[in-house]
Image 1 (cartoon, rainbow, N blue to C red):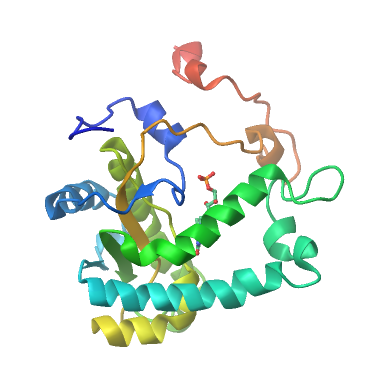
Image 2 (spheres, helix red, strand yellow; image 1 turned 45 degrees about the vertical axis):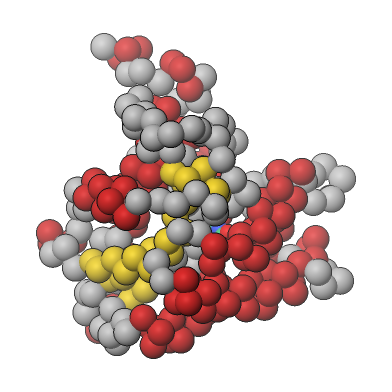
Length: 252
Ligand SMILES: Cc1cc2nc3c(=O)[nH]c(=O)nc-3n(C[C@H](O)[C@H](O)[C@H](O)COP(=O)(O)O)c2cc1C
């Protein structure tokens, strides 16, 4: 994309083409801080449990701080992704087998999975080059002290806004990917950024313009294969349609 294009306004397009961007983050193109602010303003329209707005967003721009966060991310990537993958049981590992299309019909790592994993490797080596690293935090009381819904409310008060942030970025020609690997070293990241004990880091998002804006609809399991009507296991009568037919008009 050249220059500053206006946002996409076709909601279905944004909803179906907002991808986890790893290989196509443009690390060399500066991002005005105001764009991040605008996307956060849109993101913060999302709901929070009890309308408490107990979120805090740390936008990291300082190259030295980003470098240190990247080091933490890379260390976790090596330990929890790279090493298991390159061990003798790599193709058998949860990282490969757990994903849709993780292995093909011959038991080999599928092309899609290989692409995701090479993207993950690339991101791990470059994440610190993103113009910003954004760490959303939850400032809810410690979930361990709450009732059964508390954990859901802690993470659930952040993820709607995190996703809305992803969509707002996408609509402006930027991209990101939700990452959690650095949380293996959350204490070190907290010390680095002065994040207090009562703030729980939820993810780390690298923010950059994307190289091109032509992202595709992702392959996903069909609705009726993951949805039940009334009772667990009972069929949900819906067949996925082509994306351009998702207009609501069939039911008008
Ligand atoms: C909670 C959560 C944690 C994730 N953590 C990471 C991560 O640490 N590193 C990474 O490269 N991708 C991470 N991802 C991205 C997923 O791997 C991604 O959703 C998947 O590749 C599908 O991408 P797509 O939506 O573009 O098809 C995470 C996604 C979610 C929702």
